[in-house]
Image (tube, rainbow, N blue to C red; front, side, top):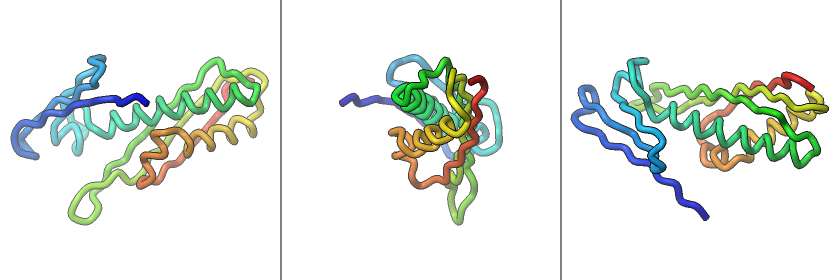
Length: 143
């Protein structure tokens, strides 16, 4: 199977340092800092990358499930909102909210929701994130 790589370099202390996160493919690099992670400052953060990974994985899984059920989608759009909160002496990713819309000709709301829920727990990234509570809001845009 495939092994995907990413790299992060952090320079300095937690509060005053900064770093760069890079995807192994070279397609993206993002600067990050304490401010961009915990205070909504400029730059990227690990939670943003995690959300992108989950949204991408979920969208692909949902597309596959719908196609297998006889409803090939025209498009699936998913936004992931990842919450990091102070818990005890540290921080934890406490919730991930997925908001997805699908354009799936001939599909009913009930069928779309059934497969969206299956993708929420069945995609590989979801399986890796079993420590966080994951919620889902799914809407069929066009039948």
